[in-house]
Amino acid sequence: MLVAYVSAQSAMLSIIYRLRLPLLIYAIYDVVSEPAVLTGSPLTSPSMLFTEVAWIVHANSSLKCPAACQCTASQSPYGYRHRSAAACDRPIDNDDLFDPETEIVHVTGNCHRSFVSVMAAIAGLSAPYELSLQRCHMYTVEELMLAGDGVNWGTVIVLDVGFNLITRIVDRAFIHMSSLQTLIFKHNRIEAIDRYAFEGLSDLTRLDLTENRLSMMTHADMRWLFALKSLEDLSLRDNGVHVLAAAAFHCRPTTCTLLHLDLGENRIRRVEDDAFIGLSNITKLRLDSSQLTAVPSAALVRLSDSLEELDMSGNQLNALLTLSFYNLSALRVLRLNSMPTLQFVDRNSFVNMTALEHVELSGNEALKYIDREAFHNAPRVTNISLSGCELAAVDQQFVKGLISLKSLDLRVNPIKCDCHTNWMRLSNITRINSNVWQQCEDDPDTTGCPPRIAALFYSKLDIPLTDTFTLYCRAVGSPPPQITWSLLSLLDNNSSFTEVHQNST
View 1 (cartoon, rainbow, N blue to C red):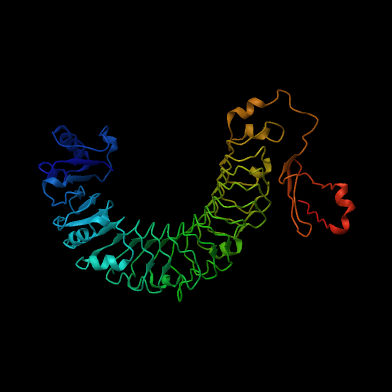
View 2 (cartoon, rainbow, N blue to C red; view 1 turned 120 degrees about the vertical axis):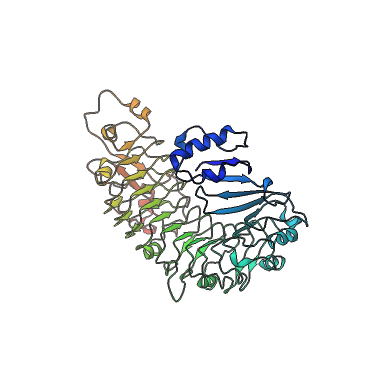
């Protein structure tokens, strides 16, 4: 969108809104040639124009505006929509007033010094649409309602009270805001939300509770969800959550309307099998940057009919084992990036993912092995990113098994040019750093192609005698190599205390 700032006295404005697009190009150039105030992106080419052009007129010509604010009025090129906005970054004086037609007010600086004056000025607005009241040192929502007693809350669609000091949301706190659709509480100190806190907000579609202290996610703690009958987007990011309990999001008596749920940047270590029961409409789920050590497979499969995008990046997984992800028939995008402990992706880690198209496994600096049969019945996978890992080779059969694959990103990996990777030179799918092929030998080894072993455990382990542990070893080769374990005589001599089971792969 092209945005131009011109003086309110320009007589051409009333004409420009009514011109068709071919003439609009000439009209805009004519305005620029006048001694008007033009800021923003320079007009360099008619190709910058789209079907909609927004004109913003400086308020100092017509709009009443507090000295601490910058006020603007906007209108579509067709003249059917007009909206006034004010952005205030300094304290507002007692006698400062907004233009009554102002619909959007953003207060972001030193609001606590003039909170009463701010609310008195907002009370003079005929139909406020969007209010942002950040850094006002509010401890409760009641303070907002008391100071804004004269505000026409019934017309407010968007309310942002982020970066305050609110600790609790009590019952019916927003009963006078029946039109509210977006409510933002980002960066407060909320520890509890009463059961009927959002009573009356039947049209609310987005609720942002990012960076608060809602550490408990049980059915009892989340009963406030019941009143939000239209909620589609919920963020509980960075709240210190440790456990997702069973039925935490179960919106009785009907299923939740939630489409997007963000639980990233918490401390989640356990997800109970029924944690997501009732979320039958969810399409996007974020569980990234937490402390999960295993994929909550049983919980995720409850979302199989609707979940299209899942992000579990930045967790503490050591491996993706068989059936880590299975039967997620609607999932299209899966992100598993930046997990410092992830070492290998085993056979059938992804099973019956019939809609899966895009898989990200980038930035996993310990990832040394991905099995040739990691994907089973994933016919639509087109892009896989394995950049920034520790892979020295990838089996050619891995690519052949993915019939729709168009791109395999292996850049920034210690790929070695030998008999296991020569196939990549002829592939139009793999993306590899060009310097890999400079290491190739002129004469290939004709004596055979011995398997390459990926060591997936530390050679020195200190384990209590009563504990059990598992060691993994995988190898790349064609045909698939058989792995045999050799135990030191020390273990053999103490076999009465040691029981060893080998699982061939």
